[in-house]
Image (cartoon, rainbow, N blue to C red):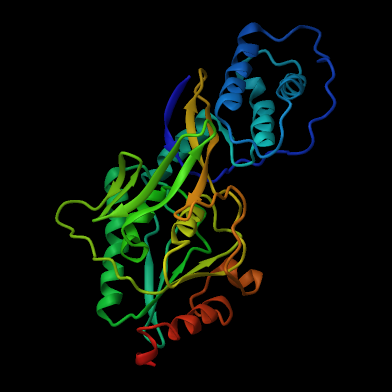
Length: 344
């Protein structure tokens, strides 16, 4: 198998999860071919060595149940459904992408993405909606980052004293492009960390137009685009049940930042990181093997509750900048922050 790089993606395939059934012998008249069993075992080696399990796992029982579900499988393709079940039994953020689905994702990465948008609200409050962004194409990553920072520059120059960062419809993707896009609001330095199942911890953060994980630069502003200086301004981060994966990383990154609160609903609960592994038949395992932590040392891996739960479910799904609940509550809090009170 081949490791294809670290990703943070939201699982897009639905798995049937539940308790591991009692182990029974496969009913197939013929035993599974050796290459099929070896294929299954290659995925189990990955899971046992690297996966962050969402529950206690009896690996022998899980393997036996997976082989039972494989039934009369004669090819590796015949066990994809069983492996998908096993992966999501261990952690619902893990998934198996078939070759055609991976090709579809690569095609989508080259399509024009949604970029950050924003506006001024009453009382010198700036509102920014940060959309999902999954492209791995370098010039698109740079464009997303540039548009985010230029939007912040524009709203700052219009007199913004407080900022609303709306993540309610952000389901994840390329976390580091997002980090650079909102870097002036997040501030410079280490913003959090990821812990791998084997105990390795790597910090991530932002400074001078660059986002990093450990020693690696994962996104940056291109040459000719000077970064906006850190604003050190109050920020209200809006969340909901569609806020997932990399977007939850952004939420955690703001934890511990002075004059910052989260408003809205509880996040999706995929505050973890996936790494992709290409299998022998072209399928790809996206394995959950990292747990997200914040700058204060707290680990997540579960849904993140807002500091101030507010707003009806539908409002937090639609994420309208004029909604009278979550956005209004965040704006009211910001208007009472230092720097905004004198502008009221």
